[in-house]
Length: 261
Image 1 (cartoon, rainbow, N blue to C red):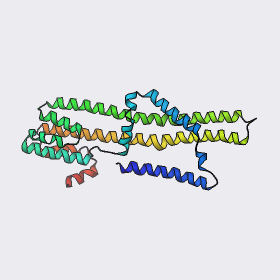
Image 2 (cartoon, rainbow, N blue to C red; image 1 turned 135 degrees about the horizontal axis):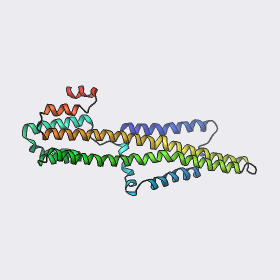
Image 3 (tube, one colour; image 1 turned 90 degrees about the horizontal axis):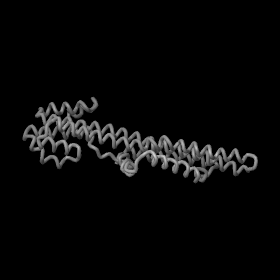
Image 4 (cartoon, one colour; image 1 turned 120 degrees about the vertical axis):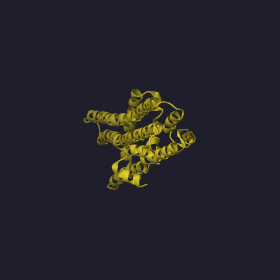
């Protein structure tokens, strides 16, 4: 479970509830934040746009995108450096074929595939070209996840504005005949719809999309480290040289800690 995602989600809910409670404590009511018409317009409209903009096979992966936001199971940079260093030492000491027994111990499909190709004796350019195609496919999958939340972020407020305009049209149309209660109800629909669209974009879709984009960059960097490490092992480089190649991907402040370890 990603602690930052959990803490941020909880804080966001508490801020919304706390703000609403302050308003209610000064003479309001919780019911004034609810508008069925606004919910239908904003959430129904946003869902319709997402279905129009994305193919069904991508939409079926949305639960996976949410799980990726709430948890991070990928191998971090320090763990990647340690793993590649261990594999490099073993290959240098016992030969590259000794890594065959290490493949199943590796908890990363990308690294497993690249190690299998190296152990099987594939040429370096074949390993690199194959795994780079895997990286390209991975990037496209990540783009689809961020695209979903970008669409929600873009069109959620738009449908909130559309619902606002509909409410205002009804309100203006009833100025001559409608009572205060009727006009107030229409104005409430307009305002709450804008609220729903704003919260959907800025408190839900925006943060999730940004976190997925950051995770994507980190994963691509980790996979690039793995690829360079496997190519270095395949070339028979000294483990120290492999370790230095891994450190090139790590921020300078973390390099000192890794070297000390």
